[in-house]
Image 1 (cartoon, rainbow, N blue to C red):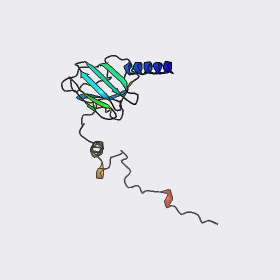
Image 2: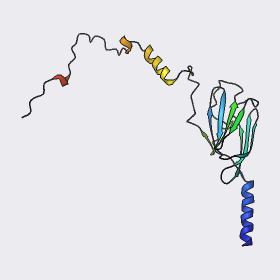
Image 3: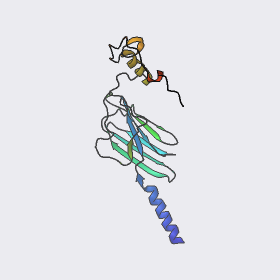
Image 4: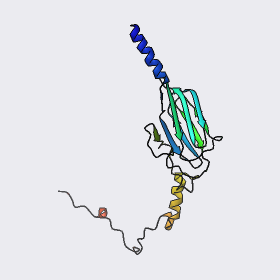
Length: 179
């Protein structure tokens, strides 16, 4: 029994000193890059912003694992304007770009894929091609419909020369009597 207890304590102490990367999602905006580290009930949170680096450390989750993520960023950020916010479910970091308006095709300097890092497609937006960023989708659609032209707000479908033709619909023909 004492051997099992000693092994259990050894495993617990080695588990608590083990650091693994926290799962994270990221997305790009015109003037900032957002990274959400998905760690529930995080404690001992340390986030360090440098000009081209991000260092994230915390203890969290049910197993109270120690997490450590160190990233060499794709481009420079403003460390003083960058911020983070802790919630019960995650830690959201807002990295203020040093050069706003420049898209980041990836989060890291290296093109390597990290198993713990993914794109947050729920928040992703292709803002580079979007010159009317403030218009809602409905406003853009309405504007497009208004510029298409045609009579009575309807688009001209290029079917000119059909004036004077009577409409003929096969549904208008008399049906034969059933016997």
